Image (cartoon, rainbow, N blue to C red; front, side, top):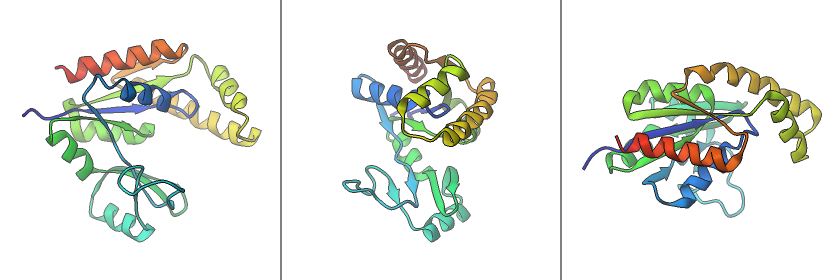
Length: 190
């Protein structure tokens, strides 16, 4: 049995990354598993450990960091961690399946360093920063201050896009889904 591959998709908030990944997973024609992240946040109603997230205490998470158990992690807020367990990724690819990770830009580049040619990094870009701002504002879920923070973060993330293996502009969702699907299909068929 051949080893699976690692597909890493990153994008600024509001670029449609999760929508694209979910559409490809739902199509079901690629041998893809979704990476389940670990987190220190408490489960929301209906969430199951090992399905939605691996729920850990802050102490457990910090111990796992110290033991080198994460291929990437981030402390999003003080004491609120998210990360990808190496054991989970390795188990899936060693079973011969491909795995898709939905993570931040810096984590994506770190995963590429770990898995090298067995990983591909895909960056989803907005058509423009102005369009990204419009998308975030039209959601109506964040204050202008939060939107400004997200735009500042997006500009930083966009500066990292040239470091990715592939870039896809999400100016038309169906085309972006098609393009990312074809990238994954071509990479996993090698």
